[in-house]
Image (tube, rainbow, N blue to C red; front, side, top):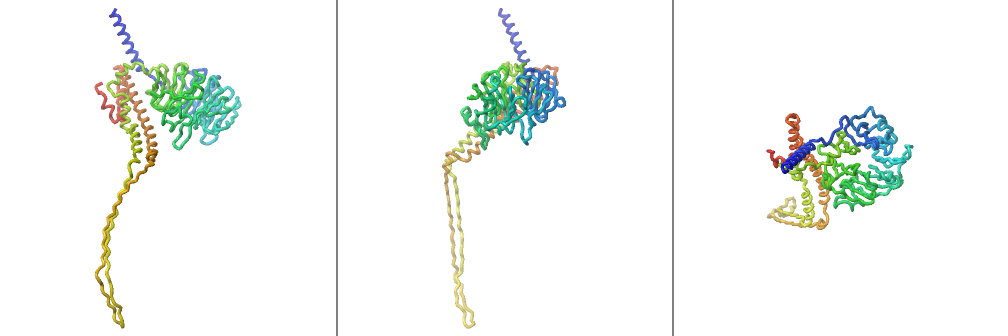
Length: 530
C-alpha cells in the first residue's frame, strides 16, 4: 500500500512539474498580424462578438472573424483622420460610431462604410468621446458638449459650464440610461436626466503648479492632492450603482453612483497614474498605466503585461475569455486564464531567481545608483527647516593708510624794481594708519515658519518622484522579462540550437540593461555558476 502511495505521489509530482513547465512556456500575449500600428482604441461587437474594430492614426480596421483577417485602407470608406475611440451601438449590432480629430462618424454596416455626422471646423479642435442613449447621443469635444436627438443629426451645444469645457470621457449606467457621467479638466459631472442638467460631484482645481483636488481631498492620501488628475471613468456592467474613476493617484470606487468615493488598494500597482480601466464580464478589474496592464485579485494588483513592450492605449474583453490591448505597436490578445493565473507554480519559478538578487534589492540598487532616494528629499527639508537657526555671518575689514607732505613757503614782496624774496620752510608731514574691523550676525526668524527653499525643494521632489517611478518601472520590467527568458531557455530542447543561442543572447542583453540601471549591482551579486 505504501509503495502504491509513493508511485501515485511520484506521478502527481511529475504531472505538476510538466504542467508548470507547459504553463511557463505558454505564450501569454499574442500579437495579431496584418494590422496598422499606433492604435488608440479597440471594440468588440455588442451582439456579434466576431466583429472586432480598431482605430488609430491611420483610421479604422475591421475583422468579422475574431481577428484572423482584417480589412482596412481601401476597404473602409468615408472615414478620415485619426480615430480616438470606437463605440458599438448597445442594441443594433450593425451600428458603430467613431470619434476622431476630424469629427464624429456613424457606420450602419458593421464598420464597412462611414458617414460623418459631426464635422470639426475650428482649428485645434477634436472630438474626444461620446455616449449613445436610446433617444439621443452626447458628444464630447475639446470645445464643449453637444447633443443630437433622434436620428436628425442636428447638434446643439449644451448650455452651462459643460458647453464650453473640454469633455474627455462620457459614460452612462447600463441599468439606468438617465445617469450620465462627464469627465472634464475641472472634475467629474453627473446628470440624472440624460444630460439635460448637470451637477459636479468630483472637483479638481487648476493652479499654476497643475491641478489639485478640492472636494475630493477627503478621499486622497496625505500630500497627494498636488498634481491630482482625473483620467477616465468606467461603469461596472454587472452592478447598477458601481462606478470606477481612474486618477493620477490610483483607482477610486463608488457604490452609490458617485455620491461617495473610496480609494482602492494600491499594493502591487507599480505606477499609480492610471490611464484607463476595464471592468470585465465577471467584474474583474483591470487598470492601464504607463508601466503596463494590472489586474486586481486577492487583495493586490498583479502585472499582466510582462513581455508586452508597448504603450498601451486601450483594453477590452469579449465573451470568449480574451483581453485585447490596443497599443502603439499594434493589437495584442491574451486569455483570461493566462492573465489571471500569474502566481502558478511559484515553487518552481523561485528556483530561477534564488541565486540572484530579489526584485526589491534590484529596485533599491537602481534607486541608489540614480540617487533618487526618498531620504534625500527628507534630508533637504530638514536642513531647510534649520536654516533660520543659523545666522548670516558677514566679516569686513577696512584699512586706511595715507601720508601727507606739504612745504611751508614764506617771503617778501619786491619793491622799486627789486625782486622779492621767499623762503621754503621745513616740511609739514601728516601720517596715519587705521585698521577697521566689522562683524555682523543676522537671523531671519521668519524662515522658521517658511522659507523660499521649500518651494525649490517641492519642485525638485516632484521631478525626483517622476524619475524614480520611471527607473523602478524600467528595472522591474527588465527583471521579470529576464526571468521569463530563463524559464523559456530552460525548456528548450538541444535540437533548438538557434533558439537557444537567441535566448542566451537576450539573457545577456537584459542583464546588461539591469547592470546599467544598477551600476553593476546585479552581476556582482549573482551566482555565475548557476
